[in-house]
Amino acid sequence: MSSTRTATARAITARAATAGTSVRVAAVGLVTAALVLPAAASTAAPASRSTCGAGCTVVSRADIDGDGRADTTSLTRLQKGKAHLLRTVTATGRTASTKVATPWLFGNAPFYGAAAMDGVRGSEIVLRTGSGAHTQFFGVYSWRGGKLVAQKDPAGSIEWVTDGALSFSAGYSLRTVKGTKQLTRISLSRDSWEAPATFSGVRTTAQWKHGRWTPITIRTVTVPETDAMWAGAGWNVRGLPRW
Image (tube, rainbow, N blue to C red; front, side, top):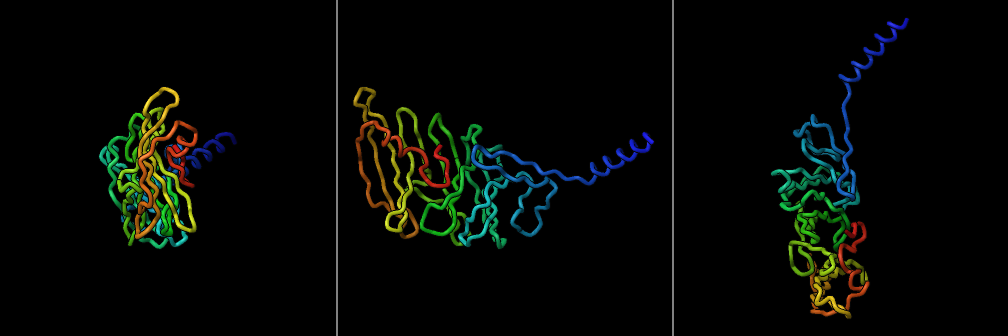
């Protein structure tokens, strides 16, 4: 009887090892968890809500094209991490992709988050493109006319920058004023360490107009070092981590 049970157990184990597939769940930074399909998944299959080929990691299910349905956004590591392919497959199967340079990540995850930032329906995709000692660099991508397009920040830069070190304060704060999105960018540096310490730089406030962040005020400022001054650093955007 014992040998019969042992033989049966071995047969079941052998069949399970032959027929089983595996699904791996991998952490993406501190922001999200990504479902990685088996490496055997066919890259020639028609686009679907979950298609992601070999070496690809799904990073977001947010609505990107603005139709109210979940889309599938993925990243594929290229050139040993010095670049990534950003790809979105919509709920209806439409596909858009763009190659993003990520030369200085130093182990940080490229995907930062997805959040509705501008005045157009659908979420923006925020990617970390580089990391300094404390300065972080990002790209912000939107679905426009079936393509993933890089947005410029309120200062007109394609490179979005945050910092919150002892000598620098940089970041973005999003709010809605009378139904219109406004985004404020600060870029400040320390003037001195002696009390009362001050920071100087530029504060730019823009509104979403004519398909871009259009500045409404650009001010050169000198401000005291206070909690309010530091509050503008990092990402102050709902749906994105601050740091």
